[in-house]
Image (cartoon, rainbow, N blue to C red):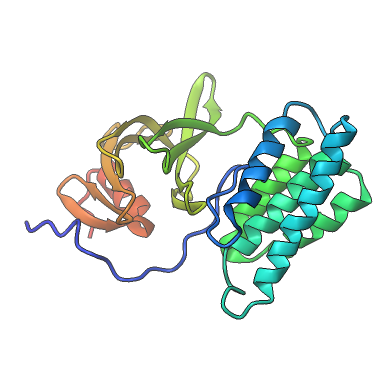
Length: 261
């Protein structure tokens, strides 16, 4: 079998945004200074529940929230950048800063939040807006529902798992892989019964997963797959060049002892 795993692929549809708040990917259009100020503010503010008590920090936050939103509006008004994902990330960042600065019940935060809510229902943004809403519902403290099971050496790619108890002491670790640089989700299964038991990074862009599916009554107990995060492709068994959008179907067949077609 000829392995074409590393050949360039055709252009694919954009991946959904999916990065746990208050994180934000690197933004090439926003300017390094603005991003550094956001990271510094969050590092200070996230130590307590909103709103922050220090008047000086509140003043810094109010100015920062305005600048973040202003930059988003500027990009949205530019024909060259009006479709950039950076607009959303700037809007979300401005709302999170206002959450801490003004408090979750404030009129100021409600105004910023409306800009995030605008993206609700838009396919690519749905998961990210939902993550933002969960963050807000927890009063700015991220819920302990997502864990980083492993990540690439440079932390560009992360394997996140959402643990849940499917039965008495029977835990499932529902996986997804995110690109922290782009703030997008590479892989997520529709069926929540998939569990990532073991993950091993083979290099900076490939991760090997051992996956099972609760309740484990398939022909095989588990299946191994190698994900190439750079190429957005997978290898499982003798199959190579599996599109990630097709991977769940292929793995289902492998678990049940069938030959995927």
